[in-house]
Length: 67
Image (cartoon, rainbow, N blue to C red; front, side, top):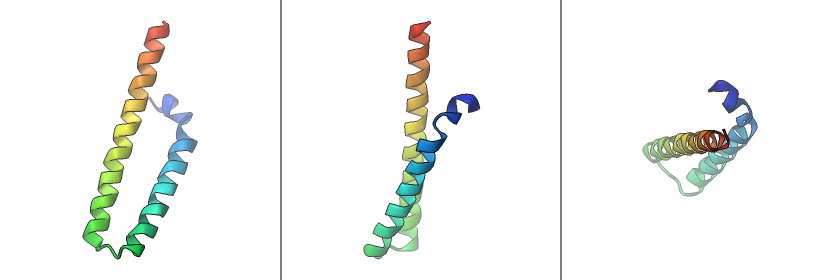
């Protein structure tokens, strides 16, 4: 599992960095409370993990179809 994640390390790092940066800039512009910021970060984390799982599942399906 970790070997398959290695090739996705750079895109994951860039994606997380841009999300966190953009989220905090937007949170400061909209004057969000700490609770709203926490909810947004949790929602972003859940969305990111779901996307990662879906991507790994799709990659696994593609490899199985080739075999």
